[in-house]
Amino acid sequence: MSTRREAVRQALSGSSGFRSAQDLYADLRAEGSKIGLTTVYRALQALSDSGEVDVLRTDEGEAVYRACDTESHHHHIVCRVCATAVEIEGPTVEKWAAEMGAKHGFTGVTHTVEVFGTCASCS
Amino acid sequence: MSTRREAVRQALSGSSGFRSAQDLYADLRAEGSKIGLTTVYRALQALSDSGEVDVLRTDEGEAVYRACDTESHHHHIVCRVCATAVEIEGPTVEKWAAEMGAKHGFTGVTHTVEVFGTCASCS
DNA sequence: CATATTTTGACAACCGTTTTCGTTTTCGTG
DNA sequence: CACGAAAACGAAAACGGTTGTCAAAATATG
Image (cartoon, rainbow over all chains, first blue to last red):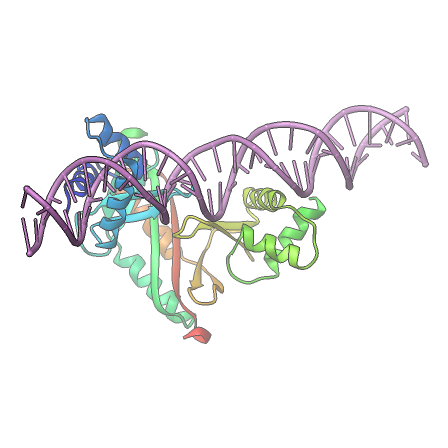
């Protein structure tokens, strides 16, 4: 793990919620780092490959990343104002997805679930 | 509703599963239409605004569209091999999402749910 | 210390999407 | 049917996020 990559990881861990690559790049530059945008992208890709961060796409097609507290499968509820994310657990959904898959003859069922809303302090 | 827009809608209805704007453009050109790519995008945007089609982003950031059978809120289970999509209903998830939102003090909660798997005929 | 390997970052290339803008088509009205 | 306004169209350029290129710098290896 190189220094730069570690810096990106920390920038991500240090902020709550989902951040875009460009956000993180701006953060790092703001604190004086001379890191390049390319390196941020590379670091995020590596971190996501190794499963250390979650990735998802916004409706605008931008990739956003988040350092996860837990290793296990879980979902998030994200504030659409301040982007703060809370990890939520959903045996309910997991079960529902599995049932639906079975019902329609699908195998190897996976699912993507994202919940958005306005958090208490932003509303 | 203009002629072009109708053509796009039909191209979409005529194919099962999610299709990208460029797919549809290729389809239309293949059958001899002189439609422009711009118009396909505009038509899809209009159709999605009016709720006649569903939109979602692939992991690669590309927007894909699908003509829906029903007007109401629902989800899909998509075959990752042939892209066939089946509409599924989930009072369970709707309720779960609302509960989770309330539990963490979020308001105006919306959600995105997509289920993927391999359909019976592809597995 | 010299050399091989990896990492880095400026910049260009990409790709899907959106905007721009001049042209064409459609449509309402006289 | 003719006219003009408004809407739709399409080619090409612009755009924004992301990825590739490549030479320079950092790091590891002998």
